[in-house]
Length: 297
Image 1: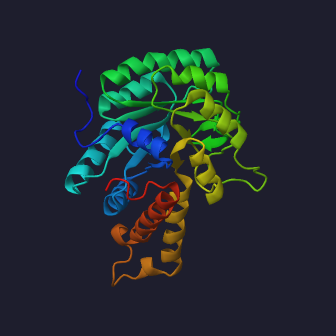
Image 2: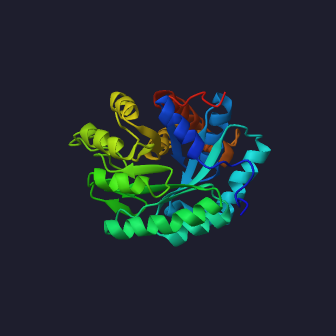
Image 3: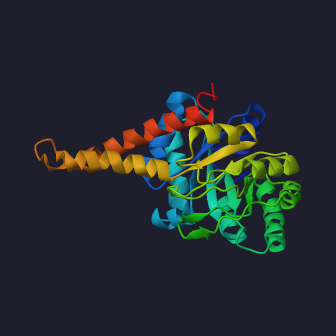
């Protein structure tokens, strides 16, 4: 069966496997609207950096649905003449049905997060999805254990991944594996003890495949670099771009530039521009830490 997603989109398998081999990590950036998608794509193209842009199920609803998102992303790829590898990914898909809908709509990569289910049911559903995804040349991410915190209503208590489950999941045909290693969605609290590198090493030894660090925003650089050395090949970022956007927008408003009627500071194109630039700068800073900056050259 021919792939359904847009010709310029690629699935994430090759870029993440190359990162695993090369001991760096691909940045996965959640998008929330046009500014988010355009900022990430523009920064990726300017820096020759491969990238995964992603939506949670909550963002899908917020942005008006799958067709709207796929149409927007494909339009940007064409109009901006994007030539770096770009994957469009479903983040924390809560059902196989939702993952299939994304594939049919034109996503090039999907995550099925069955970590809230009994493990055997999680495994069975991953196997159910794999065949459909591979027919469409779409990459698949699965999760064991769970990521702490709350992201768009997906709540996890932070269970550490089980190496036996990691080994079994790796044999299903998935392209990369997410697992709980002490990571948390959102801002890290003061009591956070850090990533469990012993857990990560045992999981990597068991599955020997690219692994995913969810909750990548705010993890200290030395811990990010160590995690990459131990097999993390995809790092998910959401909160960090949101905070950069917030801070730049707040500064613009506090300086009362939005009240400058002569310069039309109220124009949303001007009001949102500082946040747009801040997200681009944050993208560059993070991808340099991840090691993927410039890897599309």
